[in-house]
Length: 260
Image (cartoon, rainbow, N blue to C red):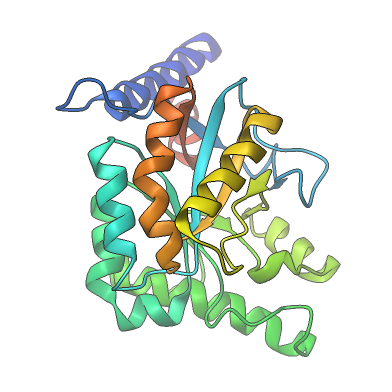
């Protein structure tokens, strides 16, 4: 039975990877594979903050976007990703997701993974500890209400990123105890700084060339990022990079459990 469980896990992952690779256009970047992320084995990832990161091969990248949704820019990012048949992960803030529910639903409907980024993007290191859990849970429940119609603090996708990467031992322990993966990053575009789209493209491609692979952090509310995204995706395609789509490990685990 264990062998059957293993086969089911492999088949589930392979089917997801095949679906991710499908694209109606030839000659685009596409999504090369699906990586199931398990909080039990990788509770915290991203070399900028933690000792370990995702098990990516050389020239594999995971695209992540923080702080959305934002009406003037997120649709432009979504259009660039759709043009290249690329799947990404969006860490949504609860308040703007509640204010722009159709845009949050549009991100999910396009097949992107949606993680969580608190309710109002307050630093969890600079507010009273009594408020940190509420900031986390309110953000999760707001996004869950928008996407699934249920206000719950149990995320359907247990992925979380701290605003400004400002975690505390207590909040890290809280999320780990709840089976929520904390995402840092391996490199970023520094798009919170004033620069032109061309300067951002040069900066992030140079960093990626040096790193060779990794989880990349962007911010979809930034106009400069929305403007440079088509060129960045072309760069990935032309330089042999492959996009990996991350999803929770739970579906594969359930398949294995059912096989026992």
